[in-house]
Image (cartoon, rainbow, N blue to C red):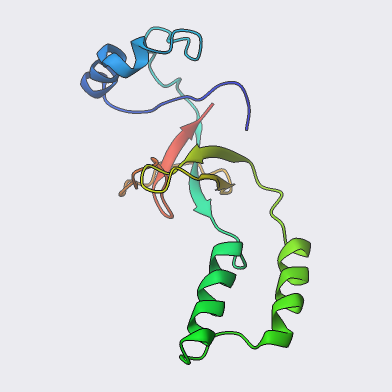
Length: 138
């Protein structure tokens, strides 16, 4: 995704983040600069999560449903599903993360919306992504 992550927020939240202990535990992983104002005359864009519609975990769930007699996927369709899944990979930027519950690695893919002239306020998820709210793009 790149070498630089820019974190947006109000000054108080950013200062609290900078003082958190977890940041200090990984001095080689972070370079934290001073808090800067957003430049004037910037564009805005939505940055949202995008997920592959076909995945290994979805295939496992479909197989399990079939074994339990609750629909699912037919035996001869599993190979077709796998071929289609491999052909439909995403080219979007991603961050590789580790699940807090299962400890498995997974990729969080992001989609960059079109540049817009004005800000759209809204809600952000746990990852700081939104389907509607924009962030300054500079």
